[in-house]
Image (tube, rainbow, N blue to C red; front, side, top):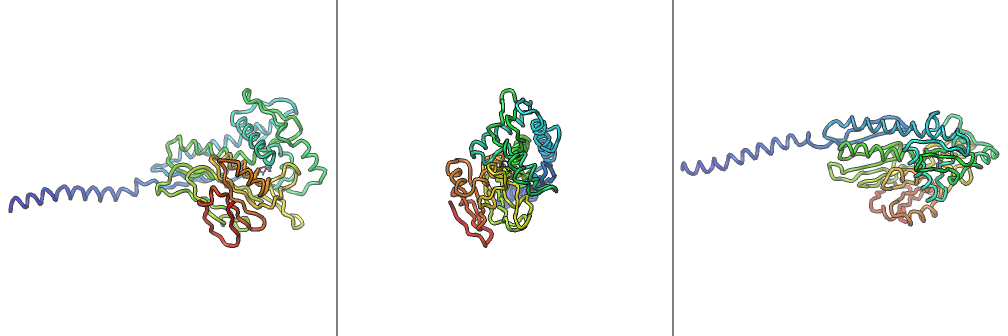
Length: 351
Ligand code: AMP
Ligand code: MG
């Protein structure tokens, strides 16, 4: 008998210890889990939202991210009088201007995207952007003559970069505008800062330029909504699931004004000087980096459906969701499986 009870006790003790360990562990588990923390701010003329999954306050790293966005804005904003871009735009034509490393990188990348899209994306459209003033209080339909003048200097071939010396020159009378690429670059930079700070996973949203990194603690993919152009913000036609990379959307509903029942929006066709009217309402680009997604969403919008899908077919890195003016949602085949329809009223196609 005595032997039996000793056996029982010698078994019961480890079981009890294990039980205590399991209970303590499971009680502590929720605190150990990575939770999402979100910070919001306003920079580069847009809402910035940074969400990180962290088991401690990641505020320091997130603040560094916001500071970095501020730095980039200081360099490239056309409305900051001593930014690199403002100084370039006011320097005499034909003379080189010294620029910072970030500016040189952005210009070098912008020229590459301009070449790739055969000038549909063109960083030299600044004078046209100023003339139309879309998104500002002085937005108006310019005279044909004013458009012809603003258009006359446009052409990315006339923007010259000496990469080694980090010097830039305008060869003709245009103004540089990096509004279609800078936010995507800033998005990548913030992701780099967060990753270097040891943060496991997060999502950075700079006015619709969305970059994701790492794996969510739940193991689920990131879900990015594709805005319905005809509905209030936050109403989606579909949702894309991705594990890494970036999504950016260029749409005619983002910044526009209406005159005499005509909508004038902020994506300009560098070959005409007028808002692009390719039969497309929005182009979302899914790409490895934010800078690609941002620049190409603008450039592909201008190209229109057929030409932009030729581009996508040639590219190994780019997928798209295109919403047309006749209510079609066209999803490139490489992303079709990751696209979930959430709204009726559109016809959905895979191409
Ligand atoms: P996004 O919202 O990224 O499509 O960028 C649109 C902004 O880029 C506009 O507000 C202009 O500042 C500038 N932009 C407009 N049209 C073009 C274009 N065809 N190529 C490059 N930048 C453009
Ligand atoms: Mg863009």
